[in-house]
Length: 478
Image (tube, rainbow, N blue to C red):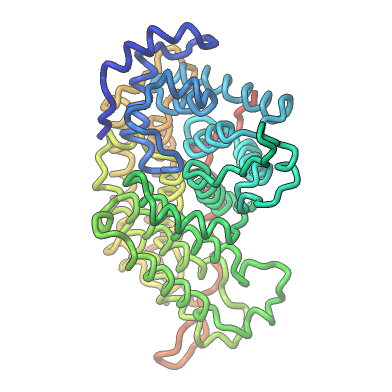
């Protein structure tokens, strides 16, 4: 919970006149509420920045004006205000990046906030890609992906009064969190869109991760460490040889896929073993764990063997593991009360979409070698889907989302409505799979791992449909 003093709102009201104002900006009192709301409900899900509880909204606006603006935007529960502030953010980012060539930590923190909760603001996939790449470019411009230079020739130009060179400022904890947060969110976006690259991991990021792990200033630092460690494994899946179009199929088949997947599973279990005891049952860490586990096993759905030499592929075992991962993820998801959904960043929405999409694919996979009934017994798609819809429909009322005066709806109402429009088609598909099908699988001796045929369902279309739930395709970037 947020323990920042309640009387700080008064000082914000008194001092707000000294700041540049704009249409529909939060009042000083509202700004304090929004900052507290962000700190309580949102920051823990994507902890790339630490704001001490003693920091007022006024102080934050003075020290980090762009970060302040982005926090006000994603923390506002007024849809019309979010829309106005969102336009202000885009104007500000354009000015800083294109006109002023701004290269500041404030700009990076603002961008990460904007991208991290892009399900509220960035309403087109191309725009999400652009902002993500801007964040990566800014990290490079700021040099946060490498150690602070010790012998920078520019330092020699900075001479103090006693003729001694100024010592370069050491890497700050704020900078370490920011660069790790940039890797995390760009990797998540990259993995989900599959069209852009994440911030490349460097030895210096290894150092930042270890420093943060050892000198954490806040409990949410530990959450960031666990998230980054797991996302590094996701990156290995994304960059695996089975995803490299430059590698020929014949070359890929020389090393069994299970070799890679088993190694990644072992790495994931090692990460889990190092989770601090007090985070063992943390819903944010567990959700990321099961999502990572799903990413590893889900590889079989897009990397089915085309070679006859696949005795070690074990696709059926991996597919059942996918179901268990999805089941475990939803068990964690449903422990979170709907009022807490207001804190969900892009990462949770992307995990939700991925789990639903994968469960749909496995629930409708047509082949006698695959037991769909066992899928239903383990994780019933429609039962889970109905519960998700029910929960999403409650959020606006419970959390006090205000859609008055807006041409659109809040993220959660829009999510529920889209899911309801999808449900009849999914139910019809599941109901039409009772007829017997002729197996396309080769007859193999008992105990031999069976390679499954390629899935020919419209899983990518369905995934895109769900994606457009919070990134509408007809949005006009302003």
